[in-house]
Length: 379
Image (cartoon, rainbow, N blue to C red; front, side, top):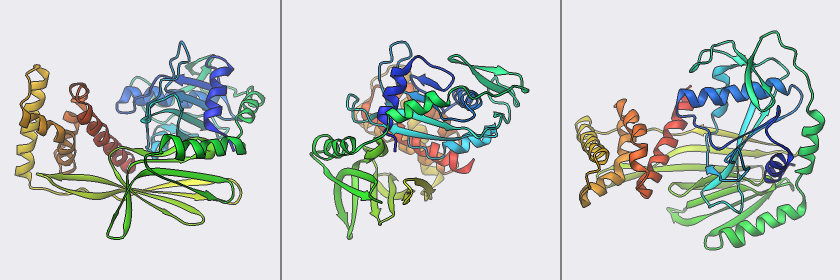
């Protein structure tokens, strides 16, 4: 079992980017250009390593190797993007790896690419890349190559050595549990459970009981063996259910208008642990959006649009307008879910205007996260 934090440290210490390893300060999958660049690197690393894993480390400064971190990325449907745009698509995983030097809301992203010994190419056009293009790693650069390439295995021994150095042990696991329960979350209700005598899942949050059910907010859930953060949210309500074989997370989102908010189930994540030392994560979207009167939503959209115009012109907002601004991301989201397609575009475009308002920007990121989940579940 590999400790992903140690794996990242070994990759960073190994050398600069190579034919099996790339690093990024961040990735952006919200637009065609960002998706295209990400797909290019996945394609190139898969083709360059037919017999071993490749990796992309996200949240690291390219020139200095400084670990800066990125926001928690919980999109379990990222494989859908890979399958939609790549022929002979590799299997990839995106994991959020906690580092003690980072703020609680930051992680290092680790993308693991498992090739299928076939030539991977773009299935269709995206951004400036043509469908049918094959990419390979040329040193630290992903480059387009001729289709009739010969794929060679040159990295297996080196990748195996790096992974072996990152294997977990009892000390790492015990230190991780103690750090999680007694240090990082000493002010919260922190618990752990052992599965199959191998896996240790820790979780912490503010617990409250409603109608006999326990819900958590300010939630962090981690698979300590691998130092992987399975879930993190400062906003949502979460229910946790355990059996001998499974750890089940049901996530709820708070939505509503005119102070009539209600919790709606968003997604269930089911982690199944097996006797052979493997585990599987399956996510099921549960979300049914609330429906509202169109005339009311028209009025709210007009209010939101007026607020954004004022922010663009640097006109100070009054107290009531600041209160409306706090609701802007959620109300744009509700409008989009009720058929106002332009509301999504306006929300995305508002990002730079909302960044100076910490609480509003947190709500913006939450709304975008929900939109991303809905998008990948329908692709």
